[in-house]
Length: 318
Image (cartoon, one colour):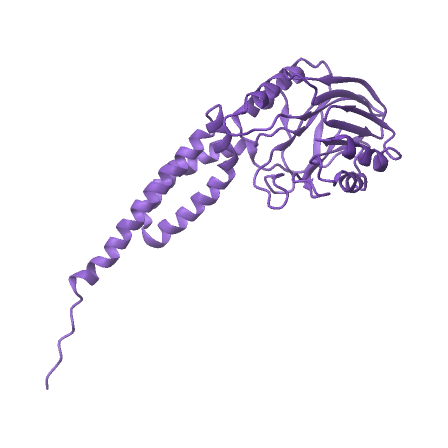
């Protein structure tokens, strides 16, 4: 009886899996280096830091996809991801979501909503209506032009009898307002304000800002405004302070660090990063809320009107 010899795999067939692993390991190495560089760049002041900070939350997605490639094709290359994972975790923690807290049953609360309604979009009335249907006590609308201001006033003035306006910023309140002050923040015209909200328990200093836009090679005005705002809230003697608006800076932007050093950044409590722009498919949080001397009970985002920004809605305990 003749037994046929088993065919031996060719040298090419034997080497194929090894080559695949080497190629995958090189890919993981390159991607790990790129992800690490982007993360480190988010700490660099200026244009580079602004761009990298906007991409920072998505670096986590890149790390996860790279880890999958390593697990499937070249497990030993997983070690190459150790540095990017560690550095990214350190960079993203300050911008991570927070947890909602329960207030006392007899605690006085104040709910504040804010949105950039996008001038000339025709959606200010719809935004104002939707925000008034929340339990917001104070509504701040940003990027108002004459037409959108008039439309918002028609909707809000009855239920929010107290209001003040400066440049492209407007504030409506159920509580009396006092000591309204326009803020130029280094610019030649006003696009921010400070006003005192007289709640039943205690006054709250409210700042609303519409920071200058960021364009390639042009962000000095924004950086100057944020620096001036940081100094203003730091010098404010008020016990309770709220700062909100369109900062045109993502959560980890180096230009925002000076503000974050002087007043607490309010974390989204809905389990997300609280991205606010662009509204159709939010990729970055550029609309922020900060506070001092108040407890944060909840903070979330809301899509209203036809703006390219989502609204922020935050409840504080006094």
